[in-house]
Image 1 (cartoon, rainbow, N blue to C red):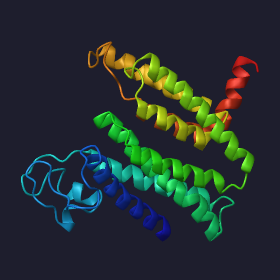
Image 2 (spheres, rainbow, N blue to C red):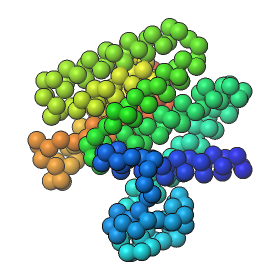
Image 3 (cartoon, rainbow, N blue to C red):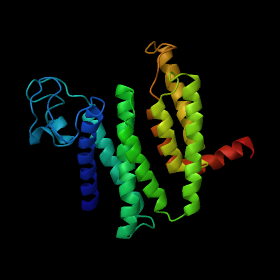
Image 4 (cartoon, rainbow, N blue to C red):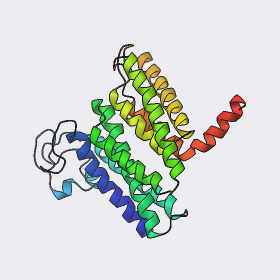
Length: 261
C-alpha cells in the first residue's frame, strides 16, 4: 500500500513536469529554465502552489494571487500520469518481471512511453503539434522496451511494421497535402508500429480512424467543426495504441472470428 502511494505520488510529480513540457515546447521555451508562474498575472508560484492535484483543490482551481481560473489540464494530467504509472507498476510486479533488472528494463521505458503519450495527446489537442523531441524519446523508449524481451525476431518484425505503416501515413499526408494528416502523425506512426508490431498495430490504427471519424461526425453535427476543419489525429492514435497494447491480441482473435479468417 505504501509503495503504491509512493509510485502514484511520483507519477503526479512527473505529471506536473509534463504540464511544463506541454506548454513550453510549443512556445519554444526551455523546459528546465525559468520558474513556473501564473499564465494571467505572471506571478511566480511558490511551493504550496505547485503540489500536484492538492494545490488545485485547496485553491479551488484559482490562482492564489489574481484569482483567475486555473486550467483543469494541470490536475487532470497529474492525476492521469499518477494513475497510469501505478497501473503499469502493478502490472509488472504481478508478472514475471520481479527482478530489479527486469523492472528497470521494462518498467522505466513503459513510464517514459506513458509520459510521451500524455504529452502528445495534450499538445496535439491543444496546439495541433506533436513535438519531434517527444517522438524521438518515445522511439528510444520503445526500442529499449522491445529489446528487453531478448527476441531479435520481434525487434525486426516491429521495425518492419513501423516502416510499413509510416509509409501508409506518408501517402495519406502526401495526397491530402498535409490537410488530412500531419507529418507529425507520419513520424508517430513509425514509433507506434515499433511498439505494437503486427497484428496489434492494425487494431490500433483501425480504432484510431474509427474513433476519429465518430468524434469528427459528432463535432460536425453540433456545429463545432466545419467540413474542411482539421481535427488533431494524435490523440486518437494514442488512445488506439493504448487499447491495442492492452487488449490487442483479444481484439484480433475477435476480429478474425467475425470475418471468418
